[in-house]
Length: 232
Image (cartoon, rainbow, N blue to C red):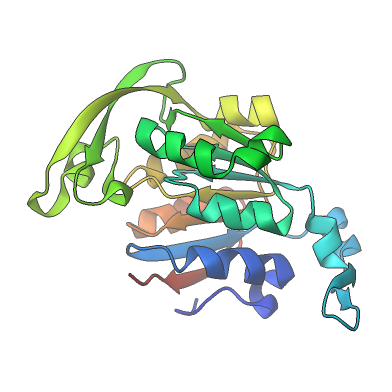
């Protein structure tokens, strides 16, 4: 592992383009994880470019239309970047204020069905109601866990939100090519849900709040990892 951005040597072009963007979010450390390459991956060669620098063929074309599930999308900062690259995106975010702003800003992607928004929190049970602690100082600190939603002595507004889980999301939209988790303390709870699912996403990104998260991902077949330092 190295404390650097995911690069083409470690993750291929997909890792370089997606995960270096996520590393610019705010927080602690991100951990990129990859499962062994599939036969489909082997078909995707490095891209070639025309004289204007636009992609003509190769890995980037293989990626277009693939599914990204962005759990903890907040205002859709990362989702917007994925959409601009041509990925289909399911943005999962329980904060009503954040999803309202996301719908307004990304309406054209909703209209084209390239973007789907699930206004729910990912938790252990599907279809229940739980408390979301919406941090009043920084919405990115909002969490289903009170200790995270009210960190550093800040205050939070409590909002009751509906829940879903990975099983329901994968059943509805399919197994994603890339799963991004940024749930402010709940990433470990969500990672454990992958164990019961047959098909798993080839690529993961989650906050490394505990090294048990790394062991959990490794136990589920992810064999390549890289720590990515986040910055404010």
